[in-house]
Length: 224
Ligand SMILES: *Cc1c(COP(=O)(O)O)cnc(C)c1O
Image (cartoon, rainbow, N blue to C red):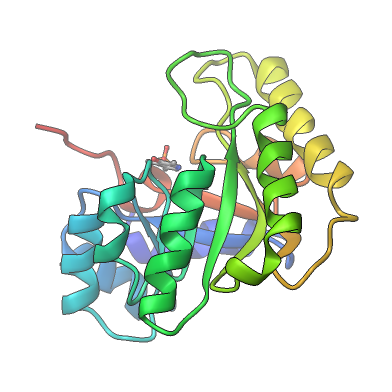
């Protein structure tokens, strides 16, 4: 199957309210261009350097989403152009994004990453940490004008157990729903980023509005 037909198959199966992020990490620009020429404009990468190289080479109407873990000292390399940062999991990182966005006279959209999986290794906030960030934002609106928190992101446990995955996505959706009342200029939870190649159908059933799909579009990745 070609990238173009994979993309078309997935897109035609998605409800209108679900945004598809094409996860192109490790893939060459030629592959991304095939998706671009098939109409895809949102690409997700998990390494800032790789994303920046692709941004430099590719058409400028692409929206680049950072879906990986972000180190604070690397925010500056994507602040000029990044469109949405999915993996924000600390106040320190949020403040650095705000600072770098300010330098570029822009507002950077962010999602807060929640820890919903069973595995210890997955990054993300627990609910207490989430509340600490919301409290800080509410009390410091004036100094955080260069970010917008547009939603939440999460990754389910890597398992074949569909019930487990469903339980974790449902939990994230309930956290998302609980915080719908926190509407301000800086915070407005509209997007719920959950679901990858293996679990996006379940994620959509559980309320996802944004799926991050890589291998089902571009084929398996070869890591060295
Ligand atoms: C790699 C990655 C994806 C896409 O994974 P696939 O299984 O290839 O669809 C989605 N989200 C994150 C955070 C990733 O790192």
